[in-house]
Image (cartoon, rainbow, N blue to C red; front, top):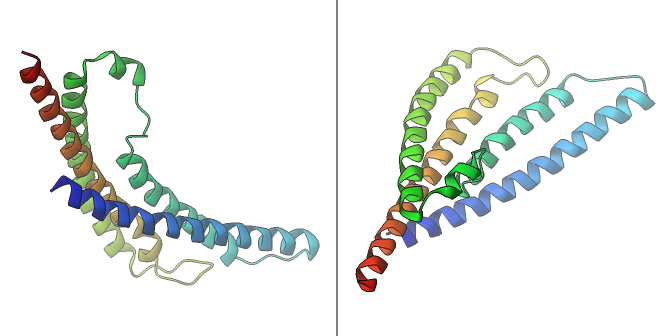
Length: 169
């Protein structure tokens, strides 16, 4: 079960990386365009800065899901590395579960925010503000999916450690 779920997340991560590559390239192009327009032609437009900002926010939320999967978020590694492997896995399971609970609350709030912002129009791009705000529920769902994998992998690791202990006795 874990293998199939991990393969699904591998494919999803590939799509996320493609999205990140495209949006980072688009941000660079839009920002260079804005700089050239502003400093070479003494002119500016309102949509380019706004587009770059929204793309960056989406990138942060998508990349946060990848970081969650790799357990690369900020944490105090020094204290965690002092723990025995079994205790470390239990601690990771508990911390990840608490994170999922927080993400569920954040998901509910972000949906409300998207619904509330649906009637607001952005100044530069003239799009519904629910589009930029949609990065929150999208990113949260991706983080929940990857957090579930982290929990499953740590349960598997605990089982493997227990099997080794039984075999050693």
